[in-house]
Amino acid sequence: MFEWLTGATRLFAILGDPIAQVRSPEIVTSALQARGINGILLPVHVTPDAFDDVMAGLKRIENLDGLILTLPYKARGLGHVDSLGREAMAGGVINAVRRGLDGSWHGEMFDGLGCIAAMAAAGVSPAGKRVLLIGAGGAGAAIALAVAGKRPAHLRIAEIDDDRATALVKRIAAIESDLPVDLGPADPTGFDLVINASPMGMADCPESPLLRPVTASTTVFDVVAKPNETLLMASALANGAMAIGGAEMIRGQVNMIADFFAQAKLDDEKDWI
Amino acid sequence: MFEWLTGATRLFAILGDPIAQVRSPEIVTSALQARGINGILLPVHVTPDAFDDVMAGLKRIENLDGLILTLPYKARGLGHVDSLGREAMAGGVINAVRRGLDGSWHGEMFDGLGCIAAMAAAGVSPAGKRVLLIGAGGAGAAIALAVAGKRPAHLRIAEIDDDRATALVKRIAAIESDLPVDLGPADPTGFDLVINASPMGMADCPESPLLRPVTASTTVFDVVAKPNETLLMASALANGAMAIGGAEMIRGQVNMIADFFAQAKLDDEKDWI
Image (cartoon, rainbow over all chains, first blue to last red):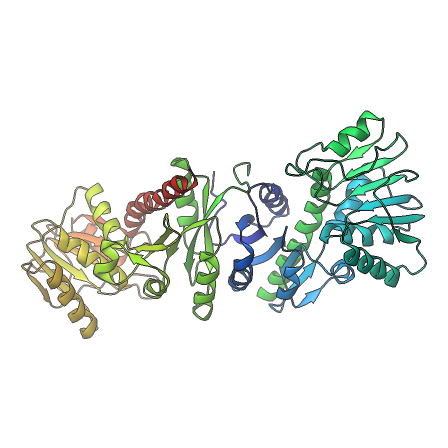
């Protein structure tokens, strides 16, 4: 059963606090093996006071090629990389890191791209749509920037932290200067697409993030992956609307991150020639 | 294929330089899973300049419960534990570390016990025997102390480094004060059991460590695991003697180390109640 696990197996790790709920170790490991990489994604539970020590230690392991960062480390990871990809630069957060050809560490953010990919798989695109995004945290900012890149007709951001909300609007304006972006309440009236990127809907705050339910003409995308069907999604489905859950976003990201890691492997192989 | 790999999987790691040749990740992982522990032993390649940083980082991972140290880290590991078991105290080296109930790290050395277990599995015991041990390095010292605990009639140690040899004899005398222990050449004449704990016999120094071949009445135990049959073993077998190889010692250690790690898990479970 474990014949594949040898002294030459390459290591990847997902760091978070908590970590027991993550499903990516199985899924990403399968995706790596499917790409011909004898690699494994490990769940690594690290508390905030230990994060810097653990990152420093993991990065010095010769056969560790990549890291995924989940809550609450998407912003703190920035301090541990040497270069950033396009999405990470725009959003100021990362959720994946790989070791490059020269031994330096490169960070990228796949939350936004994963959201777009999951919507595309369901036949939904933000292009030309009126989009309400709830939450401007790490995932919210990444999704906002990815959505902005698809040129919606209007992007409204609902976020309780004013500073965070204002900073995100400025960041979008710097990249997509002519896009109508504003701040407002979590009211879905008049929007075609509602994206929840706040933690509301998780087991410990199960309420819907919306001030009122959506109607049948509004599509809902909920980043929350557990439970599979949040109150927001259940309410949308009950009203005849389409609802896409966080599990789809994870699926959308897995292949992107496995490709990102596989590239590190290819770089390494070049190095070994 | 990877359904067992969840966010709740417990981590164990074997650290060495090099590491690609080790077989314990598969074997120890199977032994852990057979004990009902959803754990995995990872190969961790760490260079000497990175060892302290990697140890510090790994020890701060909440779901990492134990470490195995292989060449060249059996002595350096001492600086990273809070307490030592009986074998480790006697030998001054460790090859396994586990996290205890209170979060402290406990080290133990299983090379000697693994050797005794492998001999026992073949029906051989050093008790009452005239034993010649070649090599007083980390494994040699551990085996010497484990053999001494079995009360041989005579224990001779052949070691080219005089200081190391003398230190080991003193250490044995402190524990088994009335045991006949001395230093001498690697000559098997008059010995019932010859144990090679030197690196001689490995691919890069394939010679036999003995000055002359053994006769049929002498049993040979060779710590060297690769190749499966060393020159020493081949010569002993050709002369009608019994020969036990290093692969058996690894097998003997695996169950002990898995039990040692399993105990850490039980401690943790108590803690969680």
